[in-house]
Length: 448
Image (cartoon, rainbow, N blue to C red; front, side):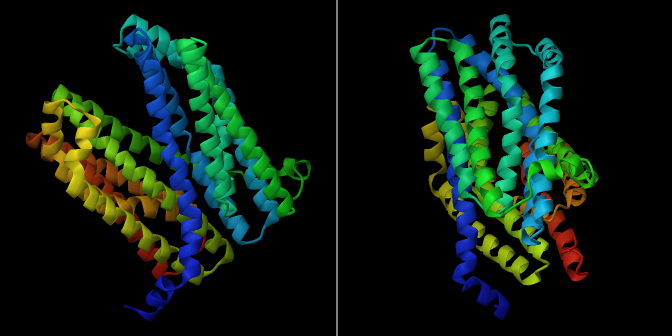
């Protein structure tokens, strides 16, 4: 083992820095599936199935829209971390202000066109009329959370960029806990049904926004950043880099969404049992994602700070420390899926035919943690380095490869689908690793 690697792995401060950033985000991520579970349980106990179907349809529309705009968090994390590392106080304040302004503009646009979007999507849906009615009811209320929800992306990214993971953790926990409590109150106690579920989510997003603003104001004072009024005139100056970075990450997110959507729709073509089995296994893939996202967030903040400081030593230490802990987590997940995968499937579904199908495709999931960890980590590295073009190109190539692999092995049906997904995850990591290696050799990676 090289001496520099040994020194880094034995450096307690490096491990402490990684875990202090990663663990809060992993803990906050746990509340996300918990919220979905409570949502389903609360609405699922109403007297008609169309209430649950309507909430599922409306919330999916909202979630996909907000998820595609998640580039606001990623770009803000990288830019603010670099400004923080370089001790550029005015730039750090400007990144926050530019992010909030852009979030508000997107929110206003979404509010302006949401009725048209709803008409188009519901006209294409094959759901029943009652499901469409309640889906539209949920959607038309939930859209009013857009200003808070999009601003929360910026707040999360900015706070992470300032190497503060506890505030984002509490933001997410407060938002989801508020949502859960209000879900129970509005739906089960006050009997507001679908409208209650939507209103609970709107109020929860604004609660998270208020808490995030409070945390940001404390950081602002502690860092002695210039007032917003003194920099507001510069918000649209030098915003080109911010827009370009967001554009590239948005295109990357579109490709990612297209791939996962194809996974769902193509699985449906293979039969009811297979789509149900895929849904069970995909929930485990989400488990990997929730765990690895915490370490991806950590490496975003650490890499951005190291680049701001122009410190190759800090950069290499952050990479080694994060890779070390990610390898441990993914190895444990691999052992868990290999040793107890069938038992985990049985916890989620009691339908024997679905269990049999899930067991048939379980080996693909067992391989997934150690294969996919690289794409999560390299995504985090390139977000921290604000290298959106490289991320976009990597995703383009990986997405094309996904479809090439699937159609090349389509005779193997669902096995081909999981093979394509495994290759997709692998290539996302490999392509970015190649870029990192080339830029590291030429000392250009530290140049944001």
